[in-house]
Image: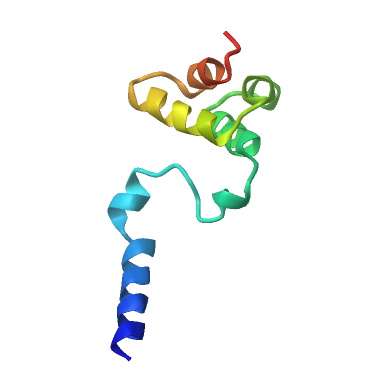
Length: 89
């Protein structure tokens, strides 16, 4: 019973940890989404058009999303980081 309670508490801590949620761009079900869709959603939410987002994000991988996160943290815009990380300068 103690193990079960420990697993439940650990699961709750991980799922509701404010530090993990605050610094994460990923949603709960983003592990099932295509990286191109996630990239496009970021750009569209940032004010870019769907056509421009599709062009900038085509060929995205999980590594592209990590690259975008790093560049955004350094002060780049989402659009420029997508272009840089996919190699479409």
